[in-house]
Length: 264
Image 1 (tube, helix red, strand yellow):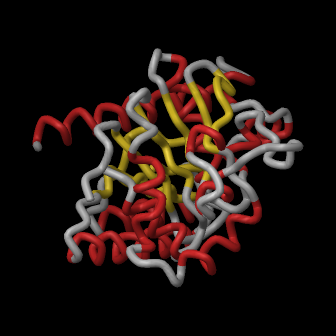
Image 2: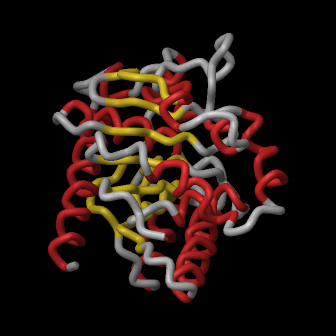
């Protein structure tokens, strides 16, 4: 099945706690700032990307991606509009964890999200998918729907690197099944360069010759403060050094798409 014309980027790591949802929400806001029309698709059952963008998944009458995946509504009905400048979000929900059971008995179950998005993303310049921190059917759906994958690695957690290696194996398996999805690069989060874990992870990823984005997102309490206010850091504290690093990362991710299109 062909993908939509709109570029789709999935943020992934098969381990939790890497800052994946935080990066997704902030890159979306940074892209929106520069005039992009962005759709965030919150596949993670924790629904953190939705709440960071100011959306309450439990609001009365709210349709979410859970309803889409059960075939109860279409993507537009589960989309919160203009949550921040230029950004819409297909709202996540904790009940998403139940969807894998529903999908397991369906034909071509790995393409369900792709099919759901296909007719509803042409108005956007960019679709960003926040995937679950595991390797299940929801994550596979998030990967199959994407052109590019951004691996998110916490540089204070040695196990986060193992999650990326598992992700690389999954991408290789998908490509062997003729699903064309590539690793655009590794986004390094929670960076403190003086830590031994940073140095060890940097060396290991270099040895594996993994593509790494130059911009590194620092370990900063400001992310937690922004999250508590349900506002992305790039809007909550726009002059913070971490916000500047997010904007730099956003530029790299957008430019990676241009390079890929030129190569194709």
